Length: 363
Image (cartoon, rainbow, N blue to C red; front, side, top):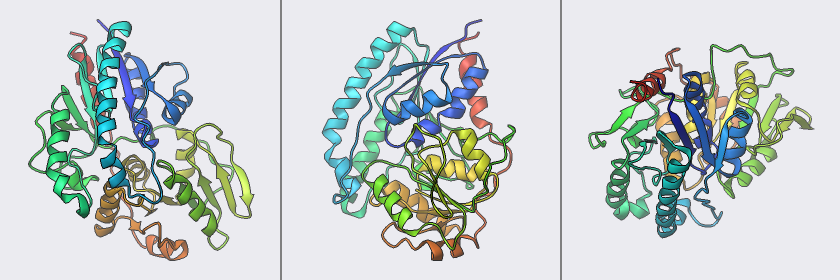
């Protein structure tokens, strides 16, 4: 019986692509697969902290940067030629990695160049349908067709969401025009309800989680620091910079940490604080799984986050506000009246999909 060798490759746009790979990697290890992680930058740092015993490969990312004065959608569109070049280069690099490391399976989180006929190739994404801003509506159909073309190059496309009406991603990954190789695997969270967690030394009423690409990460952090704490409520600000996990006191009722491990963050969330965060999909999956109430502040100009926040706000699940108009005392009062998402304990859809994939190499 062969234990397949699996290469896991998260995208380098924000930490969420790395965090949602954690349950995938964890189950692969538990199932006896040989796991190699390919990434770079903060994503690589984060996964090294979570899985120090695994083998890591430096795989250059797309290194997208943003300007606070240029809308993200326009920046991404202007970068399309360079992104095509990156996708082509990573496809060639993958070929040599597969040969050198004898890879059986490649699991790519939103990296569209990581497919190869010499290995079973899986793309993981919640953005099967691209939502563009109104000013770029003319490019919508072209982007949709292009995205689906790349998706079809993979043996499978895994969508981390539920298939029915009770879902998290809405139109981003549901509809009638979904490529035939797509399958829904349930939400992915780095948290584990079955594991015991130590009780935090201090109970927080508010947890603010900063994430996303620069320069917006820093802008969000600065705006949070200008308004926290709220009415002397114990608050923790997590800066979203992997490395130092020590919690420090910044001022009365406000502690700060650069980063927390999954176990540490889950332990704190279990006490039920209000969460202030971006509307990044991986963050939403974690918050949905932990059951906390939340204030969503989508990254300005990032249409995916703006759509997700608006959709969940419309459903009466989470409160959302723009970064420009963020008023935390008012947002906290309104968010406290909402219920958040209450999921059942069933979060194992991805395990069945992984087991089926691994069994292909064990027969």
